[in-house]
Image (tube, rainbow, N blue to C red; front, top):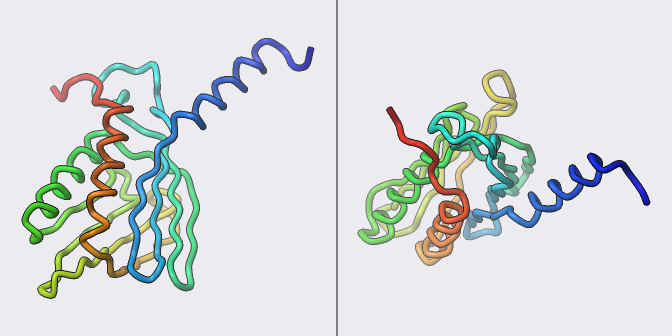
Length: 166
């Protein structure tokens, strides 16, 4: 038998995290891809609003000339807010949707242009607060929105809001 009981338990937890992960894929017209992989609750045992709603995530960005790949935390309420704005944008084909996290690692804004084309504008900061900044933008198509909305709903179904804001 290999490994101690605690090592096997930790290995089982890591395998479960891989099974639980969900991707949010934000695609561009020329092959650009911003992918956020939600791995698990950052504090799985916490039940209160402030500690319980942090999600451990991995961000991967592939755009012409640049790649980014790092871990960061996002909150369930930030995803909910983004989903509501994205839903409205998809229904009305006007307006904007924003995804910003409390730590300002990601600021992502979607605008509908007068031509009907979508434009993603983003800023990444890593590590949080003191790191390098990448500012980017790319065009997208409204036909990509339903898939993003579905992925966001899947994340919120798997990782529901904990506690209440007091």
